Amino acid sequence: MTLPSIPPHAKADILAQALPYIRKFHGKTMVIKYGGNAMTDPALQRAFAEDVVLLKLVGINPVVVHGGGPQIETALKRLGKQGHFIQGMRVTDAETMEVVEWVLAGEVQQDIVGLINQAGGKAVGLTGRDGAMIRAKKLKMLDHQNPQVEHDVGQVGDIVAIDPSVVKALQDDAFIPVVSPIGFGEENESYNINADVVASRLATTLQAEKLLLLTNIPGVLNKAGQLLPTLTARQIDELVADGTISGGMLPKIAGAIDAAKAGVHAVHIVDGRVPHAMLLEILTDQAYGTMICNQ
Image (tube, rainbow, N blue to C red; front, side, top):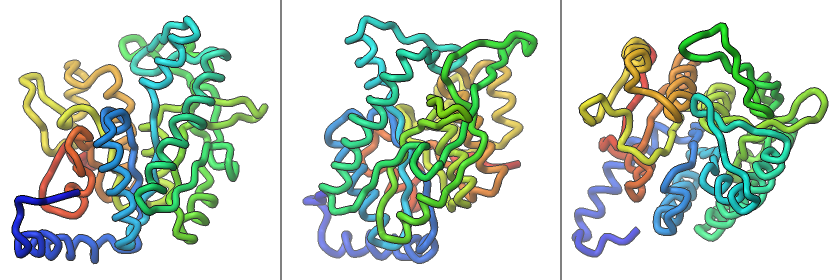
């Protein structure tokens, strides 16, 4: 990050202002859901990788959970398949599951690992199979309007349990875990799990200080398009009921409120289109999204 227009004393002030946050969060775990424009724009990719490495260097333990919706969609189109979604979840038949695995655990994950390593970090890619980390079962998706109706979304998983041992072992050895949201079932079958849900459950299991969800929007917006800087559980219920929160934002919000209720100190939905937004959110007083409060 270059700051050519800022004089040296101002740069020193910026670093000094970050010191209390570095001290406060030293040794703490932060789970980051990486997605949206931040995953596809080269400049934002580099900024994200630099931020993750900087957090690790100042004594904070980042854990990255990534999505890959656009990359999966591109791969499916190359195969002549059309993606289909129900209530924000991708319907995943056996063929689609194969594509999901090689895109997420292969192409996408290795790109992220490479970027972090190039920025000076030591990243290691994982899926839910590694270290038996994410045990899952078939998701039973009930219709939001009529709970008597159940949608079949194929090999989409619901998390049964998370064993964070492998993540903790990597953290202790100064590595940065990069997790693909793929779980496994009792019959060794694979499950595609929503990355926001994995990030939220992993943050809860690791007793993370913060959960940050990078998005393509400024945060949660009201019907007038205005940013809501903070939200409580009750306000979220009202926004879901009146349709303000819908589609792909539903699992993101559900996971955020679950994490907040389970003890994650702060959950932030962050505007990933802003360069270094994650760093600004963690180490300054600036807010670049919506904070979810458990009230």
